[in-house]
Image (tube, rainbow, N blue to C red; front, top):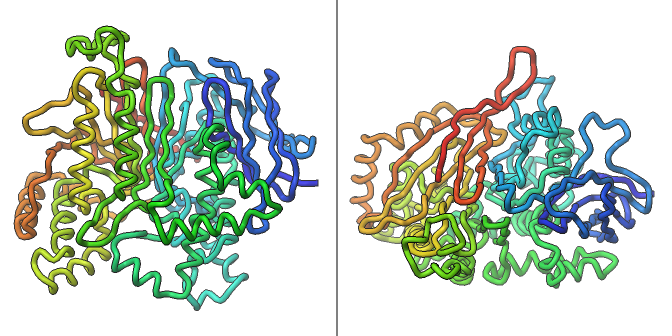
Length: 565
């Protein structure tokens, strides 16, 4: 009889339906059965010897929260009979309830050695414990995990010992992840954590990858990629990373309708073993990145979320280097502007644009752009990355180009500011979306990656968007940052750093960015999570850090709580 190996993860949820992801120990029929009578079933599919199901649950009632159980071939496997957590629920909030969006990135999931966590309390563990202790308290309506859900290049001691039992770690890639089976180990280590397992079973989640989900500085440059492809281990590592991401993360990002129209999902379910179909898909994504879209859109009432792939969608040729390939950029623009100018009878009257009534309102009141890499960085970092892009592009000759590539890899210079045309294009698009009749109340760029949190607000010369625009960065959920990096980021926001950055940019003959910005919060360091509470056209931001009490318990302590709109 099949057992439950991993999950359940509550992934997609709207007012009437949801999806629940599970991994099982063998082929079976997975069923989700809700206390209010809603239910769904799905037959497992097989990938590389592992069995999975994504169960669609229909018939949910808007504005309710119903307990559910998971059954495999009719036998109940969740919740466990000895569970110390409250029952898992599927909640279906209505537009009137508002929206609570929690987000963060960079969760190194290594279990504490000897009961002591070397990088401090895990913010997700701590959030889970708080919700479990008071199930009636307001909880996130969705959890956005903005990259580095697993670390394929930085494994725990326990995983390193497990790898050594499989292969010779003296041969590349050494104690890093090499294949699909090893990727499954990372997800087990991360998602079998009892607190995180329960949290993901009861709070819907949206995910997107960043570099460590595959390898540090993934797709930094064309030269970097050529060097990786010259090794004898990279191809298997990359294909396994993309395959496991599709199974463990991407599938749950999609709505039931999107799943029904997905030819790959149909292919892996229709064959006894979907490994070959999925591997061919991953190979196509590697050889022709523009043929595959990892970005996706979710609408939560009048909040639009666009999760943007800022890793695999890059164009790396130095003479046309962009963060997003042309098709991806066109998709992003279409999704942002779709319905943007819709409204009631007063839609053409600018005086009604922010009135909070149907007149003049577009399709959404709040736009969230989730991109693992921050759009707005400390000014010094931005200028150094723009300078480096100019050097690598040959602005100062071949010698500086070679030196620039070495600096780019060593200093991880590959954020939006390292793609100057893409940085400016995103700013122009945000300003367009946030201006005029039908503009949303807020446009928020949600990011992680840089192992600290901050708020930055942009401004445009000669125009002021009607929407409140902010870069909201929250990282890490569970990781560390050396003191030297902390000091560097603090200095990077300072006035002397801005002056130094301008001098560096002049050496690179860099055009000034099309947008200016200022830091309005932070930087804050620690294991932390941000929450946006969106109600009508109002928005409130809260940052909380996980702290250890003297009695050994962990709590989330409020660091900042402020209105955005």
